[in-house]
Image (cartoon, rainbow, N blue to C red):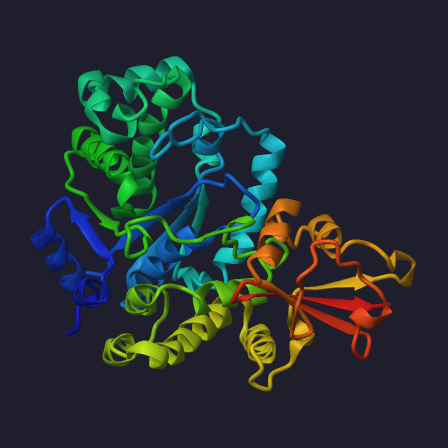
Length: 406
């Protein structure tokens, strides 16, 4: 019988284990319950969370039961892992709103029907805790010396670590203990930056219940230079179409570095690995075919087939290969605005971050309007800027914006 461990290993997910051989044996012989935590720090998940959901989805395909734990309680404190400063404090109302938004997104990837997966919110057990009882029952099991040696705290010691954040590890450890009691949860999965917190939960379950549970981490989504992927000019690459449009989402993957294509196909799609390796081995201009497959498959999973088709057609239209440009990022332009400077307009519409960015593009021959180079930084939008009521602005090699005359 095929073991999900082998699939995860082959696709490049696995990074650290508490006991690799024991975990491989357990996953091959039993159908276990496991969990991954998601703190609702925003009202949408981003692509960094997507790799965790793919991790979860592969496990579920092999009959293991996921618990998607939304951190309505831990978000009140904020995870210090990977942070150089303290997170902004959120209100209970904001957290509750974020939780409801994230739940809807998770249901696209994980099958919660008939008990195949469980959705929990740690606010249900954390917010009602008695502080003194918690300290006596749970705090007594944690060594401050070991906590201070953990990577997530070490990096914060110079700039300052609040006592509030110092409690985060206890709370995440307590989550594992509660889920183990409630659902016989035997494993916590998470990004590699969660290793210290995962170990804390495993140790707590062992001390409180004399039971062995396990932890396994997933590689973080980084590019060939070791930098985190999923950052755009507007910030994170969100799964919510209101924050990152399907076209922008598609274009992000269509434009990644050649060296990152095979890794992203393996981690972020369900394409069989033989095909992943074939696509990843393509060279020079041919690798673009693999990028189109990657962009389409991920966009289809996140936004559905219809939006993926539209994004693909818009990209092909923008690059002159016969697609439909109507799905490009678009703004409407009133005739009352004739005479406005093109750079000013694009900056006001947040197409450009700054006016200086626009001036630099024009000075470096990097901006065109309807296929013609814009050479004058003082160029103003007028009637002649439009062809059949539309103007297509190209900025750099890969960024397009459509202006429609209304």
